[in-house]
Length: 291
Image (cartoon, rainbow, N blue to C red; front, side, top):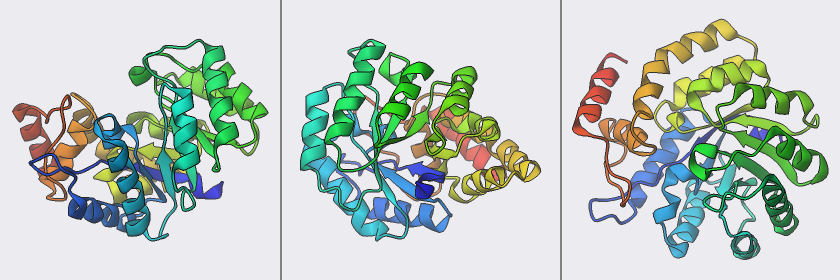
């Protein structure tokens, strides 16, 4: 599991003006983040606008990412849903030989009980040919996965190997870190809190911001894991206003505005996601001039 420590980046999905996938831009982005020093990439996460992608597009994106990454770094694949049966079918059918692990978001919309969340993950873990990373993001799913549920899964299910924690609840995060199995990884899912969470004992970050701040964010995580907190703090405060701007309206509209300013991708989306407002887009541009 050493390959899942450090900085992972949740890749955006670039689109063209006609809303088709911009494969050239995605290849450029993959090269940019790898050259910037990220330790692994995550495809088909929420940041990739997966709710607006068809099943065929998701399959094409996964295969394309494997091809263009070309084993330079590990690839984690996002496969999650509120329909447990559907997740199981996708895990059984997807060509996952080149995947390092599966990132699976907690069931959303249905708002299941903790027992429902536990059984959902236990069921998909039994069907998965790859290790599972739990993903708790109650701001999107509508239901927090408690520390107790996370720890129950971590201790009882062998191929559940890590947790991406994006609840923003530091006490919950610390409880998981304190009581987890020794070889279970706890990964931050919140760029703005990443430094504090690494200081508490997390093993890395799956980052949105690293799509743009690939070099500096990777250096922040690396220096923090080496207990070089003066260097990590300097990088955190350098990027802190950028984190605020990036998430002030919507993810991924914020990060796509950053990447658009850099000329890496176009600023295009599929509804219901829309671009950052003109005011925010200008603010981001001004920030990047001084950055």
